[in-house]
Image 1 (tube, helix red, strand yellow):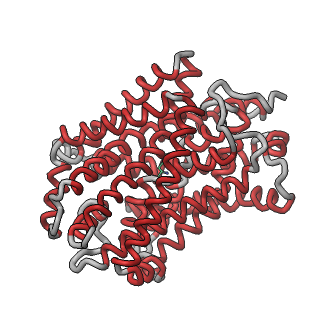
Image 2 (spheres, protein in one colour):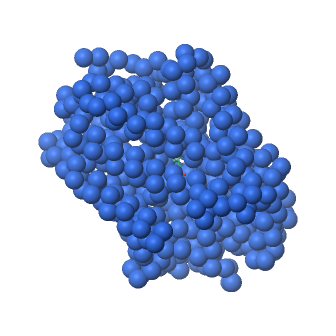
Image 3 (cartoon, protein in one colour):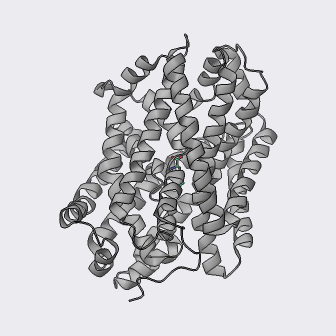
Length: 456
Ligand code: PHE
Protein backbone atom coordinates (compact mmCIF):
# COMPACT_ATOMS: atom_id res chain seq x y z
CA UNK A 1 0.00 0.00 0.00
CA UNK A 2 3.00 2.25 0.12
CA UNK A 3 1.91 3.52 3.50
CA UNK A 4 5.28 3.41 5.10
CA UNK A 5 7.59 4.93 2.54
CA UNK A 6 10.04 7.61 3.61
CA UNK A 7 9.82 10.86 1.75
CA UNK A 8 12.59 12.47 -0.28
CA UNK A 9 13.08 15.22 2.31
CA UNK A 10 14.13 12.93 5.18
CA UNK A 11 12.66 12.65 8.68
CA UNK A 12 13.05 13.95 12.23
CA UNK A 13 15.58 12.10 14.37
CA UNK A 14 12.89 11.20 16.92
CA UNK A 15 9.41 11.94 18.21
CA UNK A 16 10.98 14.46 20.57
CA UNK A 17 12.44 16.39 17.64
CA UNK A 18 8.99 16.50 16.09
CA UNK A 19 7.58 17.85 19.36
CA UNK A 20 10.27 20.53 19.49
CA UNK A 21 9.75 21.40 15.83
CA UNK A 22 5.97 21.59 16.08
CA UNK A 23 6.20 23.57 19.32
CA UNK A 24 8.77 25.82 17.68
CA UNK A 25 6.35 26.40 14.84
CA UNK A 26 3.42 26.98 17.16
CA UNK A 27 5.14 29.24 19.67
CA UNK A 28 5.83 32.53 17.96
CA UNK A 29 4.71 36.09 17.53
CA UNK A 30 1.18 34.75 17.87
CA UNK A 31 1.83 33.84 21.50
CA UNK A 32 3.98 36.75 22.56
CA UNK A 33 2.86 39.67 20.47
CA UNK A 34 -0.64 38.91 19.28
CA UNK A 35 -2.25 36.87 22.08
CA UNK A 36 -1.69 39.43 24.86
CA UNK A 37 -3.01 42.35 22.84
CA UNK A 38 -6.06 40.63 21.37
CA UNK A 39 -6.87 39.26 24.83
CA UNK A 40 -6.35 42.77 26.19
CA UNK A 41 -8.71 44.37 23.72
CA UNK A 42 -11.38 41.64 23.92
CA UNK A 43 -12.12 41.66 27.62
CA UNK A 44 -9.34 39.46 29.05
CA UNK A 45 -10.66 36.31 30.73
CA UNK A 46 -13.72 35.70 28.54
CA UNK A 47 -11.54 35.81 25.47
CA UNK A 48 -8.92 33.55 27.05
CA UNK A 49 -11.54 30.95 27.92
CA UNK A 50 -13.01 31.03 24.40
CA UNK A 51 -9.52 30.74 22.96
CA UNK A 52 -8.67 27.73 25.11
CA UNK A 53 -11.99 26.14 24.14
CA UNK A 54 -11.15 26.63 20.47
CA UNK A 55 -7.71 25.10 20.96
CA UNK A 56 -9.15 21.98 22.54
CA UNK A 57 -12.33 21.51 20.51
CA UNK A 58 -11.13 22.65 17.12
CA UNK A 59 -7.38 23.15 17.17
CA UNK A 60 -6.21 19.80 18.51
CA UNK A 61 -8.49 17.63 16.30
CA UNK A 62 -7.61 19.62 13.19
CA UNK A 63 -3.92 19.50 14.03
CA UNK A 64 -4.14 15.72 14.38
CA UNK A 65 -5.88 15.50 11.00
CA UNK A 66 -3.16 17.57 9.37
CA UNK A 67 -0.36 15.50 10.81
CA UNK A 68 -2.16 12.36 9.69
CA UNK A 69 -2.40 13.52 6.08
CA UNK A 70 1.23 14.68 6.15
CA UNK A 71 2.60 11.47 7.58
CA UNK A 72 0.60 9.40 5.14
CA UNK A 73 1.92 11.32 2.14
CA UNK A 74 5.46 12.09 3.38
CA UNK A 75 5.74 15.00 0.95
CA UNK A 76 4.96 18.71 0.82
CA UNK A 77 1.37 19.54 1.84
CA UNK A 78 0.29 19.94 -1.77
CA UNK A 79 1.51 16.50 -2.80
CA UNK A 80 0.58 14.78 0.48
CA UNK A 81 -2.93 16.10 0.01
CA UNK A 82 -2.94 14.91 -3.60
CA UNK A 83 -1.91 11.45 -2.45
CA UNK A 84 -4.59 11.33 0.23
CA UNK A 85 -7.19 12.38 -2.36
CA UNK A 86 -6.04 9.81 -4.92
CA UNK A 87 -5.80 7.00 -2.37
CA UNK A 88 -9.34 7.72 -1.25
CA UNK A 89 -10.67 7.87 -4.80
CA UNK A 90 -12.02 11.33 -4.00
CA UNK A 91 -12.81 14.29 -6.24
CA UNK A 92 -9.59 16.02 -7.24
CA UNK A 93 -11.02 19.38 -6.13
CA UNK A 94 -10.14 18.41 -2.55
CA UNK A 95 -6.54 19.13 -3.50
CA UNK A 96 -7.36 22.80 -3.07
CA UNK A 97 -6.75 22.24 0.66
CA UNK A 98 -3.03 21.76 0.03
CA UNK A 99 -2.82 24.80 -2.22
CA UNK A 100 -4.79 27.00 0.12
CA UNK A 101 -2.50 26.03 2.97
CA UNK A 102 0.72 26.70 1.16
CA UNK A 103 -0.60 29.99 -0.21
CA UNK A 104 -1.66 31.13 3.27
CA UNK A 105 1.76 30.11 4.57
CA UNK A 106 3.49 32.19 1.95
CA UNK A 107 1.34 35.26 2.69
CA UNK A 108 1.91 34.87 6.42
CA UNK A 109 5.67 34.49 5.96
CA UNK A 110 5.71 37.76 4.04
CA UNK A 111 4.34 39.89 6.88
CA UNK A 112 5.62 37.70 9.70
CA UNK A 113 9.20 38.47 8.73
CA UNK A 114 8.46 42.20 8.90
CA UNK A 115 7.11 42.02 12.46
CA UNK A 116 9.94 39.69 13.49
CA UNK A 117 12.24 42.41 12.16
CA UNK A 118 10.76 44.85 14.70
CA UNK A 119 11.72 42.47 17.50
CA UNK A 120 15.28 42.23 16.15
CA UNK A 121 15.49 46.02 15.97
CA UNK A 122 14.27 46.33 19.57
CA UNK A 123 17.01 44.04 20.89
CA UNK A 124 19.48 46.70 19.79
CA UNK A 125 17.31 49.68 20.60
CA UNK A 126 16.80 48.57 24.17
CA UNK A 127 20.44 47.52 24.61
CA UNK A 128 21.59 50.95 23.48
CA UNK A 129 20.13 52.48 26.65
CA UNK A 130 18.02 54.91 24.63
CA UNK A 131 14.85 53.72 26.30
CA UNK A 132 16.03 54.29 29.88
CA UNK A 133 13.39 56.15 31.85
CA UNK A 134 11.33 56.82 28.73
CA UNK A 135 7.65 57.84 29.06
CA UNK A 136 4.68 56.64 27.01
CA UNK A 137 4.75 59.47 24.50
CA UNK A 138 8.48 59.09 23.89
CA UNK A 139 8.18 55.31 23.54
CA UNK A 140 5.38 55.79 21.08
CA UNK A 141 7.55 58.23 19.13
CA UNK A 142 10.41 55.70 19.06
CA UNK A 143 8.09 53.05 17.68
CA UNK A 144 6.69 55.43 15.05
CA UNK A 145 10.23 56.32 14.10
CA UNK A 146 10.90 52.66 13.32
CA UNK A 147 7.65 52.21 11.40
CA UNK A 148 8.16 55.33 9.34
CA UNK A 149 11.61 54.27 8.16
CA UNK A 150 11.26 51.77 5.27
CA UNK A 151 14.98 51.16 4.91
CA UNK A 152 15.36 50.25 8.59
CA UNK A 153 12.35 47.92 8.34
CA UNK A 154 13.64 46.35 5.14
CA UNK A 155 17.08 45.81 6.65
CA UNK A 156 15.67 43.81 9.59
CA UNK A 157 13.13 41.99 7.42
CA UNK A 158 16.00 40.91 5.15
CA UNK A 159 18.24 39.82 8.02
CA UNK A 160 15.40 37.78 9.45
CA UNK A 161 14.67 36.14 6.11
CA UNK A 162 18.36 35.23 5.67
CA UNK A 163 18.36 33.62 9.14
CA UNK A 164 15.39 31.49 8.08
CA UNK A 165 17.02 30.47 4.81
CA UNK A 166 20.22 29.44 6.62
CA UNK A 167 18.22 26.95 8.70
CA UNK A 168 15.96 25.61 5.97
CA UNK A 169 18.82 25.14 3.47
CA UNK A 170 20.34 22.66 5.96
CA UNK A 171 17.43 20.26 5.40
CA UNK A 172 15.17 18.46 7.82
CA UNK A 173 17.73 16.72 10.04
CA UNK A 174 20.74 19.02 9.99
CA UNK A 175 18.98 22.33 9.48
CA UNK A 176 15.52 22.38 11.03
CA UNK A 177 16.13 19.51 13.45
CA UNK A 178 19.27 20.92 15.00
CA UNK A 179 17.86 24.45 15.09
CA UNK A 180 14.75 23.50 17.02
CA UNK A 181 16.62 21.22 19.40
CA UNK A 182 18.88 24.12 20.33
CA UNK A 183 16.43 27.00 20.21
CA UNK A 184 13.47 25.57 22.07
CA UNK A 185 15.22 24.73 25.37
CA UNK A 186 16.82 28.19 25.23
CA UNK A 187 13.40 29.72 24.70
CA UNK A 188 11.88 27.92 27.68
CA UNK A 189 14.79 28.95 29.87
CA UNK A 190 14.40 32.61 28.98
CA UNK A 191 10.65 32.45 29.45
CA UNK A 192 11.14 31.05 32.93
CA UNK A 193 13.65 33.77 33.78
CA UNK A 194 11.22 36.47 32.66
CA UNK A 195 8.39 34.85 34.57
CA UNK A 196 10.45 34.97 37.77
CA UNK A 197 11.31 38.61 37.08
CA UNK A 198 7.66 39.52 36.51
CA UNK A 199 6.59 37.77 39.71
CA UNK A 200 9.28 39.56 41.72
CA UNK A 201 9.10 43.00 40.12
CA UNK A 202 5.77 43.20 38.32
CA UNK A 203 2.16 43.34 39.43
CA UNK A 204 1.55 39.64 39.03
CA UNK A 205 -1.78 39.45 40.83
CA UNK A 206 -3.27 42.17 38.61
CA UNK A 207 -2.12 40.22 35.55
CA UNK A 208 -3.74 37.04 36.86
CA UNK A 209 -7.04 38.72 37.58
CA UNK A 210 -7.00 40.47 34.20
CA UNK A 211 -6.38 37.26 32.24
CA UNK A 212 -8.75 35.12 34.29
CA UNK A 213 -11.66 37.38 35.19
CA UNK A 214 -14.58 36.75 32.91
CA UNK A 215 -16.22 39.78 31.41
CA UNK A 216 -18.46 38.16 28.82
CA UNK A 217 -20.09 41.48 27.95
CA UNK A 218 -16.82 42.61 26.39
CA UNK A 219 -16.81 39.61 24.05
CA UNK A 220 -18.53 40.05 20.67
CA UNK A 221 -18.95 37.57 17.81
CA UNK A 222 -16.05 39.31 16.20
CA UNK A 223 -14.08 38.55 19.38
CA UNK A 224 -15.08 34.88 19.16
CA UNK A 225 -13.91 34.79 15.53
CA UNK A 226 -10.65 36.38 16.60
CA UNK A 227 -10.28 33.76 19.35
CA UNK A 228 -10.78 31.01 16.79
CA UNK A 229 -8.49 32.66 14.23
CA UNK A 230 -5.93 33.03 16.98
CA UNK A 231 -6.27 29.34 17.89
CA UNK A 232 -5.57 28.39 14.26
CA UNK A 233 -2.76 30.87 13.92
CA UNK A 234 -1.03 29.94 17.15
CA UNK A 235 -1.16 26.21 16.49
CA UNK A 236 0.14 26.83 12.95
CA UNK A 237 -2.78 24.92 11.46
CA UNK A 238 -4.58 25.47 8.19
CA UNK A 239 -1.45 26.57 6.38
CA UNK A 240 0.52 23.47 5.62
CA UNK A 241 3.18 23.99 8.27
CA UNK A 242 2.04 21.20 10.55
CA UNK A 243 1.18 18.96 7.61
CA UNK A 244 4.73 19.40 6.32
CA UNK A 245 6.24 18.70 9.73
CA UNK A 246 3.96 15.68 10.11
CA UNK A 247 5.47 14.29 6.90
CA UNK A 248 8.78 13.96 8.75
CA UNK A 249 7.31 12.36 11.88
CA UNK A 250 8.44 8.87 12.89
CA UNK A 251 5.86 6.22 12.02
CA UNK A 252 5.70 4.81 15.54
CA UNK A 253 4.79 8.10 17.26
CA UNK A 254 1.21 8.33 18.55
CA UNK A 255 -0.38 11.31 16.80
CA UNK A 256 -2.99 12.16 19.44
CA UNK A 257 -0.67 12.15 22.45
CA UNK A 258 2.07 13.98 20.60
CA UNK A 259 -0.25 16.73 19.43
CA UNK A 260 -1.75 17.17 22.89
CA UNK A 261 1.75 17.81 24.23
CA UNK A 262 2.39 20.40 21.53
CA UNK A 263 -0.93 22.16 22.19
CA UNK A 264 -0.24 22.16 25.91
CA UNK A 265 3.21 23.71 25.42
CA UNK A 266 1.79 26.27 23.05
CA UNK A 267 -1.09 27.41 25.26
CA UNK A 268 1.18 27.51 28.29
CA UNK A 269 3.59 29.80 26.50
CA UNK A 270 0.74 32.10 25.45
CA UNK A 271 -0.63 32.32 28.99
CA UNK A 272 2.83 32.75 30.53
CA UNK A 273 3.69 35.47 28.00
CA UNK A 274 0.43 37.20 28.82
CA UNK A 275 1.18 37.01 32.53
CA UNK A 276 4.69 38.37 32.02
CA UNK A 277 3.56 41.23 29.79
CA UNK A 278 0.56 42.30 31.90
CA UNK A 279 2.51 42.03 35.19
CA UNK A 280 5.00 44.47 33.77
CA UNK A 281 2.35 46.69 32.19
CA UNK A 282 0.25 46.87 35.38
CA UNK A 283 3.31 47.72 37.46
CA UNK A 284 3.81 50.88 35.41
CA UNK A 285 1.34 53.70 35.98
CA UNK A 286 -0.37 55.23 32.99
CA UNK A 287 -0.16 52.29 30.56
CA UNK A 288 -3.29 50.58 29.30
CA UNK A 289 -3.60 46.82 28.66
CA UNK A 290 -5.84 47.60 25.70
CA UNK A 291 -3.05 49.26 23.76
CA UNK A 292 -3.37 46.95 20.70
CA UNK A 293 -0.49 45.94 18.42
CA UNK A 294 1.79 48.51 20.09
CA UNK A 295 1.51 46.75 23.46
CA UNK A 296 4.81 44.98 23.09
CA UNK A 297 6.68 47.78 21.37
CA UNK A 298 5.38 50.82 23.24
CA UNK A 299 4.08 49.78 26.64
CA UNK A 300 6.74 47.24 27.44
CA UNK A 301 9.73 49.51 26.71
CA UNK A 302 8.26 52.14 29.05
CA UNK A 303 7.88 49.51 31.72
CA UNK A 304 11.33 48.03 31.17
CA UNK A 305 12.87 51.51 31.09
CA UNK A 306 11.45 52.31 34.49
CA UNK A 307 12.60 49.20 36.33
CA UNK A 308 15.99 48.52 37.85
CA UNK A 309 17.71 45.99 35.63
CA UNK A 310 14.84 46.43 33.21
CA UNK A 311 16.95 47.14 30.14
CA UNK A 312 18.81 43.84 30.39
CA UNK A 313 15.57 41.98 30.96
CA UNK A 314 14.03 43.91 28.08
CA UNK A 315 16.85 42.89 25.77
CA UNK A 316 16.42 39.25 26.82
CA UNK A 317 12.70 39.61 26.20
CA UNK A 318 13.21 40.72 22.61
CA UNK A 319 15.80 37.99 21.99
CA UNK A 320 13.18 35.53 23.20
CA UNK A 321 10.56 36.95 20.86
CA UNK A 322 12.99 36.85 17.94
CA UNK A 323 13.87 33.21 18.58
CA UNK A 324 10.21 32.29 18.85
CA UNK A 325 9.52 34.06 15.55
CA UNK A 326 12.51 32.40 13.92
CA UNK A 327 11.48 28.86 14.85
CA UNK A 328 7.99 29.65 13.52
CA UNK A 329 9.02 31.25 10.26
CA UNK A 330 11.16 28.29 9.25
CA UNK A 331 8.00 26.18 9.38
CA UNK A 332 6.34 28.57 6.94
CA UNK A 333 9.26 28.41 4.56
CA UNK A 334 9.72 24.63 4.64
CA UNK A 335 6.38 23.53 3.10
CA UNK A 336 6.80 25.89 0.14
CA UNK A 337 10.43 24.87 -0.32
CA UNK A 338 9.54 21.17 -0.15
CA UNK A 339 6.81 21.71 -2.73
CA UNK A 340 9.07 23.59 -5.15
CA UNK A 341 11.73 20.89 -4.84
CA UNK A 342 9.16 18.23 -5.73
CA UNK A 343 7.46 20.19 -8.47
CA UNK A 344 10.48 21.53 -10.29
CA UNK A 345 12.97 18.88 -9.28
CA UNK A 346 15.45 21.48 -8.08
CA UNK A 347 17.80 21.52 -5.10
CA UNK A 348 17.03 22.83 -1.61
CA UNK A 349 19.22 25.90 -1.93
CA UNK A 350 17.63 27.12 -5.14
CA UNK A 351 14.14 26.41 -3.87
CA UNK A 352 14.92 28.43 -0.74
CA UNK A 353 16.09 31.40 -2.72
CA UNK A 354 13.02 31.44 -4.94
CA UNK A 355 10.51 31.08 -2.07
CA UNK A 356 12.23 33.38 0.41
CA UNK A 357 12.79 35.92 -2.37
CA UNK A 358 9.11 35.91 -3.32
CA UNK A 359 7.98 36.24 0.31
CA UNK A 360 10.50 39.05 0.78
CA UNK A 361 9.15 41.01 -2.19
CA UNK A 362 5.58 40.51 -0.96
CA UNK A 363 6.73 41.62 2.48
CA UNK A 364 7.67 44.98 1.05
CA UNK A 365 3.93 45.63 0.75
CA UNK A 366 3.63 45.23 4.52
CA UNK A 367 6.72 47.37 5.11
CA UNK A 368 5.25 50.21 3.05
CA UNK A 369 1.82 49.87 4.61
CA UNK A 370 3.32 51.36 7.78
CA UNK A 371 4.69 54.42 6.00
CA UNK A 372 4.48 55.45 2.36
CA UNK A 373 1.39 53.33 1.61
CA UNK A 374 -0.33 53.92 4.94
CA UNK A 375 -3.24 55.64 3.19
CA UNK A 376 -3.92 52.91 0.63
CA UNK A 377 -6.75 50.79 1.95
CA UNK A 378 -8.18 47.46 0.79
CA UNK A 379 -11.72 47.01 2.19
CA UNK A 380 -10.79 49.48 4.91
CA UNK A 381 -7.56 47.71 5.80
CA UNK A 382 -3.95 48.66 5.18
CA UNK A 383 -2.05 46.05 3.17
CA UNK A 384 -0.60 44.53 6.33
CA UNK A 385 -3.92 44.46 8.21
CA UNK A 386 -5.58 43.03 5.14
CA UNK A 387 -3.12 40.12 4.89
CA UNK A 388 -3.40 39.50 8.62
CA UNK A 389 -7.21 39.44 8.53
CA UNK A 390 -7.40 37.49 5.26
CA UNK A 391 -5.06 34.74 6.44
CA UNK A 392 -5.97 34.29 10.12
CA UNK A 393 -9.69 34.99 9.94
CA UNK A 394 -10.66 33.81 6.45
CA UNK A 395 -8.16 31.44 4.82
CA UNK A 396 -7.24 29.45 7.94
CA UNK A 397 -10.83 28.78 9.03
CA UNK A 398 -11.80 27.75 5.48
CA UNK A 399 -8.81 25.50 5.19
CA UNK A 400 -9.49 24.08 8.66
CA UNK A 401 -13.12 23.42 7.76
CA UNK A 402 -12.15 21.59 4.57
CA UNK A 403 -9.58 19.49 6.45
CA UNK A 404 -12.14 18.40 9.06
CA UNK A 405 -14.65 17.45 6.36
CA UNK A 406 -12.06 15.65 4.27
CA UNK A 407 -10.61 13.61 7.11
CA UNK A 408 -14.02 13.14 8.73
CA UNK A 409 -15.94 11.93 5.70
CA UNK A 410 -13.70 11.36 2.67
CA UNK A 411 -10.32 9.98 3.65
CA UNK A 412 -10.09 6.21 3.31
CA UNK A 413 -10.60 4.33 6.59
CA UNK A 414 -7.48 2.18 6.01
CA UNK A 415 -5.30 5.25 6.07
CA UNK A 416 -6.89 6.55 9.26
CA UNK A 417 -6.64 3.21 11.01
CA UNK A 418 -3.04 2.76 9.98
CA UNK A 419 -1.96 6.22 11.10
CA UNK A 420 -3.95 6.13 14.32
CA UNK A 421 -2.70 2.69 15.34
CA UNK A 422 -2.21 2.35 19.08
CA UNK A 423 -4.96 4.87 19.86
CA UNK A 424 -7.70 3.49 22.09
CA UNK A 425 -11.15 2.92 20.57
CA UNK A 426 -12.73 5.56 22.82
CA UNK A 427 -10.24 8.28 21.93
CA UNK A 428 -10.53 7.44 18.26
CA UNK A 429 -14.33 7.65 18.42
CA UNK A 430 -14.18 10.93 20.32
CA UNK A 431 -11.78 12.39 17.78
CA UNK A 432 -13.96 11.27 14.89
CA UNK A 433 -17.10 12.80 16.35
CA UNK A 434 -15.22 16.03 16.95
CA UNK A 435 -13.71 16.17 13.50
CA UNK A 436 -16.98 15.26 11.74
CA UNK A 437 -19.51 17.32 13.63
CA UNK A 438 -18.30 19.52 16.47
CA UNK A 439 -15.32 21.20 14.80
CA UNK A 440 -16.88 21.88 11.37
CA UNK A 441 -20.11 23.24 12.87
CA UNK A 442 -18.17 25.41 15.31
CA UNK A 443 -15.87 26.71 12.59
CA UNK A 444 -18.77 27.46 10.25
CA UNK A 445 -20.89 29.25 12.87
CA UNK A 446 -18.04 31.32 14.23
CA UNK A 447 -16.85 32.16 10.75
CA UNK A 448 -20.25 33.33 9.47
CA UNK A 449 -21.12 35.28 12.64
CA UNK A 450 -17.67 36.82 12.92
CA UNK A 451 -17.48 37.98 9.32
CA UNK A 452 -21.05 39.30 9.55
CA UNK A 453 -20.16 41.18 12.72
CA UNK A 454 -17.09 42.62 11.11
CA UNK A 455 -18.65 43.95 7.93
CA UNK A 456 -22.30 44.67 8.78
N1 PHE B 1 2.12 29.71 15.19
C1 PHE B 1 2.89 30.86 14.92
C2 PHE B 1 2.68 31.91 15.97
O1 PHE B 1 1.88 31.77 16.84
C3 PHE B 1 2.59 31.46 13.60
C4 PHE B 1 2.74 30.49 12.52
C5 PHE B 1 1.70 30.17 11.76
C6 PHE B 1 3.93 29.87 12.30
C7 PHE B 1 1.82 29.24 10.79
C8 PHE B 1 4.04 28.94 11.34
C9 PHE B 1 2.97 28.60 10.58
O2 PHE B 1 3.32 32.92 15.94
